[in-house]
Length: 368
Ligand code: COI
Image 1 (cartoon, rainbow, N blue to C red):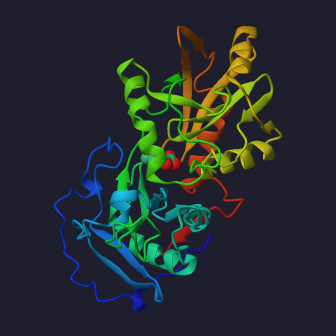
Image 2 (image 1 turned 180 degrees about the vertical axis):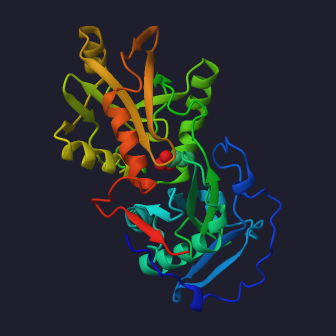
């Protein structure tokens, strides 16, 4: 595949006092495991938006604490959203960003729900590629490690009235990461949450906004203190239909059918979800995006039809589920990782590291 020369270099403001060291060890010298989201690269990217001017002032500068107005509406009213995508260094040395356009498009579309300005797709894409190219030495070399790219869009106007802000920042951080779960591909124990809900119909569930994650923290912490790794969310209205698992989309295999809950305003349109559906359909697997209830899951487990369960997400890729706890009931999955989860994991990571053909044009390779 050809690498892209795309970038924003010539138009960038003099950032130019790029410091040569940030205090964090370069991942190239950092021994595994890296963990997730603890180490950051040397630079951050910022773009500003204001009413009348639109997007302007693109800067790549040394990562540092932000000067934010203490009345900024992102801090008070949560007008903020983020994305998460990854760049991989293959054994051939090439750096490939996975599904960059799908991630940027999701942010572009999601901003409207929070009354925020749409990101400028072309400008963001070019600046982000330039940022990754500048910090290319921070893309880890080990298989299983990658550079997590975290764009964050937030309202900066210092005003305490409740209305959409007039000024915003788009910020991008780069973080060399290993496995999201310490367990790696080891099976997760999942608690089916029956008290709290992650979101509601008509709410923000389809948008990658901090509020959804804040809503999940208490239930997740309680599940953890009871020996579970994450929670499985049920729908807010009936408290019976499966929605998401932790920060991931959820899949189960019942007999020869792989089922995942349908997209709507309570489920995030996961990019790994979409990649998994595309791959499974290309393999001839019977895949359904349909409503599935906890009763159906329990019945499938009792009849022996429940073969496997797994979560999909950018951070964890594929996370197999080994056990589900529902009150006093325990459902044990026969295989974790099961056949489909293993095949998906191997195929997605094979494409990401440039070992398998990129049949769907999911990769953007960055010229050194
Ligand atoms: C993802 O895996 O897609 C995530 O959003 C995880 C992140 C919140 C850490």
